[in-house]
Length: 283
Ligand code: G3H
Ligand code: 13P
Ligand code: ZN
Figure (cartoon, rainbow, N blue to C red):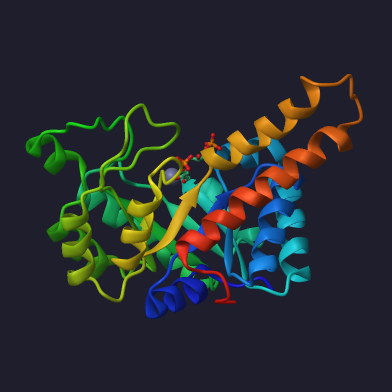
C-alpha cells in the first residue's frame, strides 16, 4: 500500500529501526526493491532523484511506483530525493508522490528555513511529508580536522533551531558520510549523532550516502536514532555486475536475460540492507 513518509518514519522512530530508502530509475530496480521488502515484510521508501525523473519521466515513474505500491502488501512510500526546485517538488506532489525532500543544504541557515517552510506549507496541505537537510555531505576525507568538521557537519544547535522553526517531518544530517563510492573508510561522528538525537528525540533522522559504510557503523547509527537510510550506489553496482555477468560471458542479446540476473542481484543487496537496518518484519 502507498503511504506517506511520516507514517513509516514515525513508526521507525518509536521502534528504533531504520527504513531503507532506495533510488529507483527503471522498472527492474523498482521491482527488485519492492520484491525484497515484500519478502522480508518491511516498510520501504522508493525514491526518485531529479535525475531519475529526467531519465524516466515523471509520469512513467509515478505510474510505475504507484502500481507497485498499490499491489504491495507492505507500506511503500514514493519519495522525491534531493528536490531542489519548486517546479520539481510541486510536480511530484501533483503526480502522487507521498513524500518530498527539499534540499536547501547549500543555503545559509535562515534561507534554508524560509524555503523549507514554503515547501512544507504546500506539501502538508496536500498530505505529503517533507524531509529537509542541514549540513554538507560529500568529498569528506578520512582525516578531517575539527574545524572542518564544524564547518561541514550538522551543528546540533542549528538542527534544534531548524526543527523548531519548520516542524519538518524528518531531517537529513551530515555526520561523515558522502554520496557515491568511498576512497577510504568513512568514519561517522557518532557523538554528534547522539547529541542531535538527544535534542530532537521526536524527529526521524536521515542518513544519506550510506552505500559503502561499514555494517557495524550502520547498525550503530540505527541504534542511535537514524530512521531512514539512503542507498543508491550499492544497488547501481549490483545492477552493473549482474549485467556484466551475462554480457561478458555470452553472446546474449535478449534484454530480459540481461536485466533479469541484474534484478535478482539488486534484490539480494536490498534484502541485506533491510536486514541490517532492522526493518524486516516491521510492516
Ligand atoms: O544522492 C544522489 C542519488 O544517488 C541520486 O543520484 O542524481 O545521479 O540520480 P542521481
Ligand atoms: P549512495 O549512493 O552513497 O548510497 O547515496 C544515496 C543517497 O544518499 C541518495 O540520496
Ligand atoms: Zn542523498
